[in-house]
Image 1: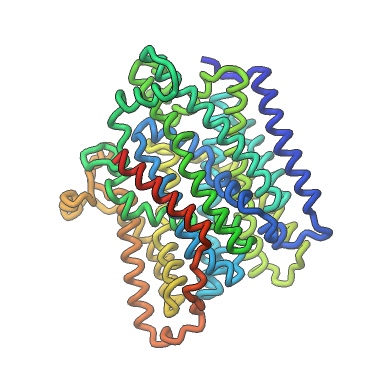
Image 2: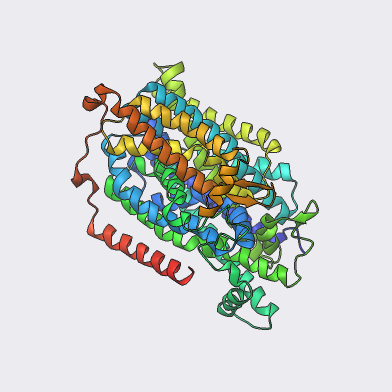
Length: 558
């Protein structure tokens, strides 16, 4: 198996690099203002079009965690892992209709700014620190680590050289500000989809040839026959992967919290739309929803194909790591089979995904630190030039921190994607409860918000590490506690845990708020009217189409 890139591969990659860097420089010079202010640097000051917003959302979202981690889950679990992508399409519609109008009407630039405006400075500052730690320690670091690991597996280039090059490339793009990130992301998504589809095409052809056939449609049909257990969207309780995707919870439970928190209360996602008008922002999110429907074809099907081929005796050595089967090797193994030139294209696609995601996250980390920590606490009198310079310095320092701590990152047996989802899930329930009630219930107090934020985190840890009591075992009858074969103890699926913590946080917030007589006339409540949430006819048609496709997919692969 070829673990190195050849001359043609490097040429294809060089073309990709020149196009992205050249277009980024062109956008930077064309749209550069005489003096770059903080809104221009962090939000692109409303200059992003709907297609740039949608593409940038996907580019920031799809990274090594999907290409490597989700493909690995495709190998381990199957099509069911696609629920993260397909439910995200529905979630983007909800966010576009109900969340964006509130943000835009209140001129929100950052999530902590919203919390300060709705609650108080204490809630905003604590949450800003939470987000910074989460984004740097879990998100940014894991993407850099997984991206470098994948690229070194494909190219044979030293792991640390890959990591530094990815970080430097991302820094160059990030220092241009949100305009450069947003528009270069359009090209990044083009390479991402083109290269991803090339890998999927190869994977399906390999499956077809393995059984003496030809053609991608035949390969897909053979996959459904030889890995039928990998083509069910709803996992049954007796499935060993039930703890990762617990049955109907993916449709009516914790999966909604995962997605609504990620797409609606997440700085490096919502930031793309916060500088645009409502119609443009909504259309951008709708476009991202359509792209989300496509993602499982690019990141999940190759993993299932690798599983079928592995079952037939291929990749026995390549799929091993430290003496055990490592599903996260599935995508790099397939890329190493690509012919010269096409391998360079797929290599560029993977690099594009990693760099775009790193740039987006670094920009948002910089935004939160600069506007919500530095400007509010350390230098309240800082002028626009100083704020932008601090933001740029924060980008560089953030990347250096990520490089250093990535050496200590331990991706567990669940794989990179599930690692990120589960550990982000410690914070998500409380944060989403705080946002949801802050949006739609005027009485919600800052005390209630603090309970959700801190109490939600503590409850998440409690239910995660709860001792193996008999009453926990009794929950097995309703599917809320399953025997984990790795630990030998009964555990709650993390999606169910998120759902339970969210409900407790909401109940606690309601009790705390009602117990405060001043909450009846809360001056921090948001002014909301029904007309804010009325979408255009075109948006409605697109939303109905997405929902119809989702219903058909879940019906076929139930």
